[in-house]
Length: 173
Image 1 (cartoon, rainbow, N blue to C red):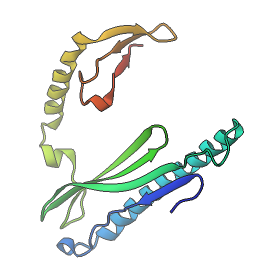
Image 2 (image 1 turned 90 degrees about the vertical axis):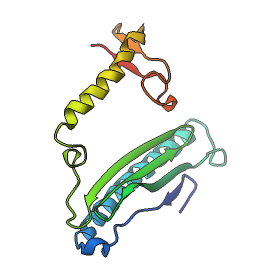
Image 3 (image 1 turned 120 degrees about the vertical axis):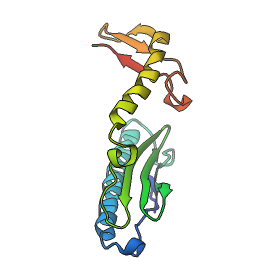
Image 4 (image 1 turned 60 degrees about the horizontal axis):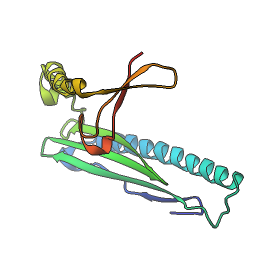
């Protein structure tokens, strides 16, 4: 649906009640729908605020470009036993904002799949090890000062991850 202030496109996933004979799917589907409703309501309110600010600063309704609000999902993994997916909301105007909500469930019981279930009891240790490897890039950081004079470490694009992360910064307080 759309109006002068926003274009909204929503694709909400639903867990099929027939999967694994599970009757828990309705409650998960309600959780997903409530999350989507809350995300879209926030984006719609922001669209109204943007429009009002645009008009208040001298813009005209004809010049205004509606905000795009898109809700979709991505299935990362699915088997006869578990499913892992995300509901993704993207809001675009001159830049884009994304929000991800992740869902991981055992299909037969409806129980949530935990990090420990998926990665084992030593997952924290393994995650810390991976973070230490990332932290090795700290020696490549450059220094700048923020407006309050606090030191800020600036990492070059791609130093800590994909280029879309830009130049990550870490303020030392």
